Image (cartoon, rainbow, N blue to C red; front, side, top):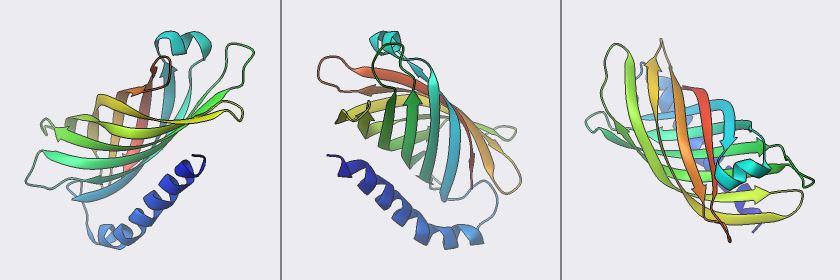
Length: 177
């Protein structure tokens, strides 16, 4: 199971390579294929929050949004790190998610959206690694700039762990090309 996060990283990077040439020819914020980078804070929720402090998050995205449809597809690869409040080790969570993105409207250079999907999550707390499926749902706002977009996003992630779900909310700010 420890090979799964490495496979997710390799597949994500391999998928982005052929898209970079097509993206270089496009301009503006209405690209049908885009990639992005984001970072922010990760807030543990519920019982999970009792054992871990607020941490940080970094994320890479690959999105496909047909211009004629309000619904697109986005794949995310994220790394979350949370400090321990107890005697156990800090925790890192690597996730790969596939998400539907619903654009709500586009006014004044701002475009709110809803996002949700399924994913595979690998949690490692000092050598004790576990990989489980999970769900996520949330929303964000895209801000169009010259040649790229920025976005602010919050999502609720729930990992289906053995005894109780592991829940957290990353709040990220990113750029999309």
